[in-house]
Length: 456
Image (tube, rainbow, N blue to C red; front, side, top):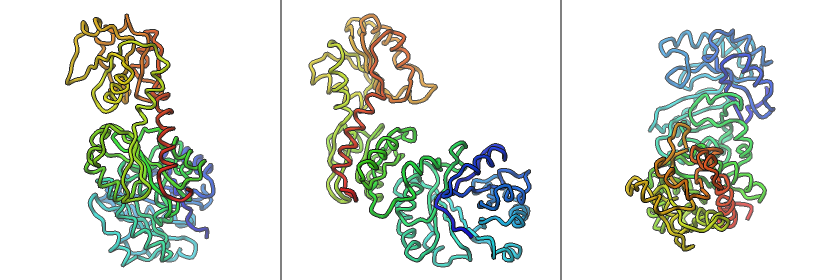
């Protein structure tokens, strides 16, 4: 029998035909997980046969994120065991259940993965490892309440690796992404992925293409962690941008989205996860540097090793300054009052441009904007992140339209409602993607040169 590969891909498609097509496209280092609870009308033996035995068969309870009713445990187990005549390579059996006689008789050709899902705040992995049930591999799944929770799995995973145990232990939810991506670096034997053409079967599950692009299966204990921290961050282009550059520089760093909106939680996570490089986004650009004793706003932090002092930079300011040098001089209307707006105003002031700033705490009247006659407009609010967002300060934009010649959009989505307005108004537009490329390029240089880890 073949060993368990590193990537297990949960077939979460709406139909079995779509799931089967996906499974047939998977590479050798990715094993399809057939969730029988997602296809309850299909014959389990036939599903296994369609995959020519190459699969992990699971039937998940509703209380553990599946769809099989909790009140029908006997029916669930019976349905799971109906897959055995198809001779699947692997079968998932819950950690605390005895091995059924039918499965016991099939152990000559079926390997058993023992799994357990625990609630948020429960960390009983070490105790469970002291009393392992019979099996060939083990999976422990918890829930991340705080980013630092991920670090609690590092020790048990290393312990299992040193003893030759095939263990995967990770946390669900957006805050649990580090435990999924760093599984190999911490000693885990496998991790779960979403199909590239399907939806995640569990919160925080990453697409197979993402795990492979980040080379998660090749990570080792010497890899250092970088990331983008703030909320929201799951949309960030940062991981794709920085990880590609780390790989080209032969730098053993991994860059991840680190979802967090609270400075105290962020500081706790930086130390627990031994983060070496950080991109800071809203709402932490001012509060996190302050909590670390640094003057903000900053969007970039790095250090040579855990425990060493942080260094900081504001590559947003550098990127905006570069863009500004190519724009017509004159007064500028700045929309917003957060960290990005503060950076914008500081750069404008340093170049001697007159600034009028609008925000919820400092509202302006349209007549004030018209009298100011701005040549440029900088959109530095968070409006535009979501598709349903309204345009920021529409009455002020209309007052600025007659005099405006250019606009800057800080949000780096492909399109925003403000960018559409600026184009319709005939303004020269600096898109958020342009600013992102400039500021992220500077960040990558700081991370590669300033962070520790192998490859330096």
